[in-house]
Image (cartoon, rainbow, N blue to C red; front, side, top):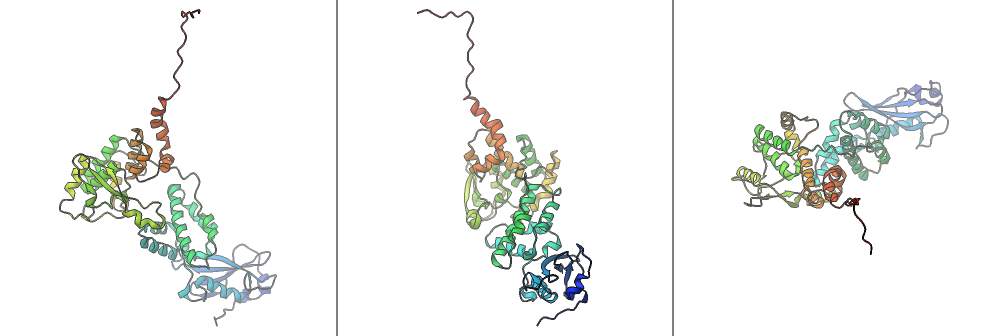
Length: 417
């Protein structure tokens, strides 16, 4: 039988009712290392509050049941002092009170989510990124005890430190981890907590699509080559193809078709929107035309490499990371600064946006633009519609406008029949 801890100030109903009503809980007994029971005195039944250390000098608290101050205990919602002890240890450690069956924490949920992503050949970065921004208190908290208010407070605390769209992506990644563990642990019944607390911020869907002129794109590529030739090859490839960096770094030597007149790359597809079949999508490829100049540079760079070897490598001969921004972000900042632009606004993705808009302005059909950039017509229209409206459609539809009427001359006399 579990050891019961005495604490005279909270043991009996009469002792608790002598305490002053206040919002801040009264400290109670230590039940185990890092686990304490507290009590909040209310006008009605008081609340039993669990306090747990996160192991890093901080702690979290959670009210979990009512005290039997004005009604008898029911061993579920209303608990005596000793029943509250048992329930507190179960919540902090697991169903049987042992550390081996501890309920999964947010930290554990992210670990499981990362393992699941790796098993599905998806990007583990989606599980790693939220961890950077979560507090140690939230990371150590059991998922089953998360509240909407604390998740919302965390989400809103990120405002001003990153774009709302980035916050929404973080929240979606964290929410996916919580959903995953909830499917496997029936004790987690608070899905509403993260559905409310991690709800997307409004007005965050407008993409920060920085579009560069052709002249600036050429400067971008030239500056990259000047700083580091392998970085220049990657940048040149992104500028010509409009591919996502994560796609380009998966190119193999055999994906380069060095035709003298019509060179092209067989670009790996992105796994975006792939659901459970991401690994299948990532093996698929589609044809993207490239310039003869880029084809010659790539051909020279891969001399002596096997067909299955990576097409694009870093300066030290190693492949780029699956998220190449982790390798090149400081260099790209220097490149962008060197051509007189702001690295806080202009990233490698500006080359993709510029490629899409360039094709739209040259009246290439939207369906073809979408295919060449491995996206959908809907996404093109959603994020680049102003370019379509202001430029492409204007030129096309102007020819269909009603022609102006020819004013009648004053000296024209109608013939009489």
